[in-house]
Image (cartoon, rainbow over all chains, first blue to last red; front, side, top):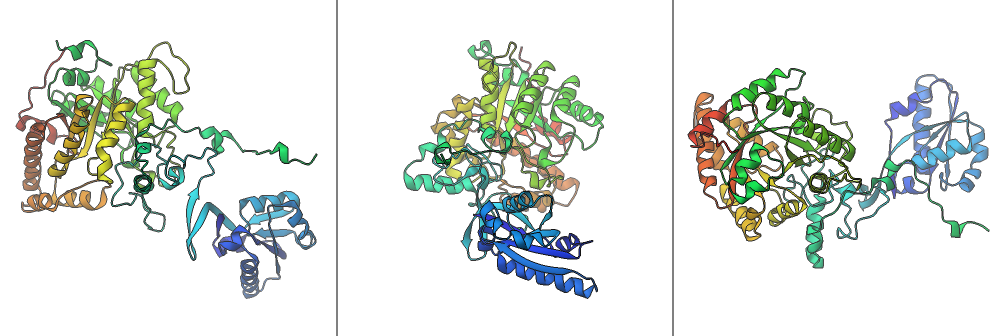
Length: 227
Length: 316
């Protein structure tokens, strides 16, 4: 799933400057599951903004709404009337949803209230780990189902660097969190699968043209298009 | 002249020394964090005559410095052959090929292919790490440029760069059981020589060398054992705790710490380095030493002399 984190409140509040009406728009799909931007979180943010405005003696009308999915035109139709009432929308959807909303209702001012950060999985309750870089050229069939592109800090394709220690990467996360060495994990699972030889096969340079290095990507399924 | 000398790949001094079966000595020189090229000239002058080639680091520890290409050239103008380090962290495949073509035109013949310290350890942690290739595919790319006269994309070139291709390996990195096999992968990709991570845990290094010999790799690649003279007990502690991939046994730290801080500890560090060079030189398959005296290049001549490695061979 796509995960996102709310921006710091002061940053969000500053976006409302000069406005007297603001709509907080949540999305009830990915960002709701990661407890960041669903309808409930949109309601909470709207309340926080409202309280802060009152403290400052500022006239600011704040409401909230949520789309089932902000990234699809038909679900945006369902909130169109509400969106139409407000000159400023703070979107709590992922970057795809925010852009869909901005495009659907252009040139209305749509601002991001969250930072979209990864394609992650919920490892345990309230913990998400990045699992996919959407690189467009999946290699995990060769790496025991573990992605070295996103789970190795250096995106190595030919095995662990010299900084792997006791199953951990030499790199620590931005909050000091430990990172598992992807290649140590790959090696253990390849052994368990009896496919050790895959570790020693040469992997040529990756084709990054299939990733965002090739420019914005477009997928068309001709067979699925309406006749 | 040995048969090896008839089939030189680059004709560098380092390649000649190693191909002639002489015990090689390489040093290391870190370019400065400013535009003062004289620093490299001075370091080169200290090392001239005491090493067969000097590694010129490439933004080591992910800190910006004079680029390794210009620093390597400067070292060579000052009488020391360079081993130009090249990391995958700061350049994509276009830049890595362009720089090596440029290096070759300047007469730089030894290249060391590295992944590079992670960008988060350096002074621009907000930068985007490149990692278009990794060290193994970098080795192969340069080998194909040299031997096949082809760019990575497959296009042909008229004049190929003459390169002696090196790599690094860390016998102390986990998973330990992969470390000799990983060197094999680099050798198969095209590495001509390897310089190891600094060795402090000699028994572990010897075990790795046993695995390396079992794979026959010592016949296919020239292995230079990494030596770092310890300048102080504080430095040893720092390396043990804070430098990724380092294995510094406590008894080494205790030995240095038993001396008074300052010159006594420095003397003990140099003495230890000399002892280690002598011990490692006896290990079957070790073809030389790579002395990494971090910001202590002045220690190298004394260590090389005391280890009985002078004069350096003149191989033509």
